[in-house]
Length: 58
Image 1: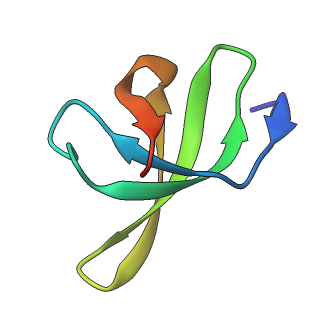
Image 2 (image 1 turned 180 degrees about the vertical axis):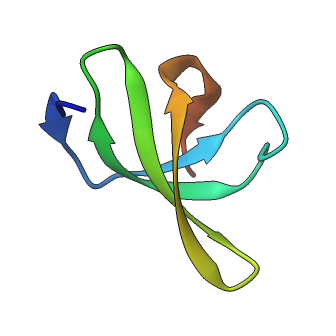
């Protein structure tokens, strides 16, 4: 998987089963998916979401 750019910004998931969970953006792929770091049950997890499922936190 080629990463388009690497960023470190806080976002919040706006849709799906992770709705309202804060995440840290790790990278954005060329196909407009965002790779984020979530803390679930005290364990860091890396997941990919469509850009449309994330919004700025705060």
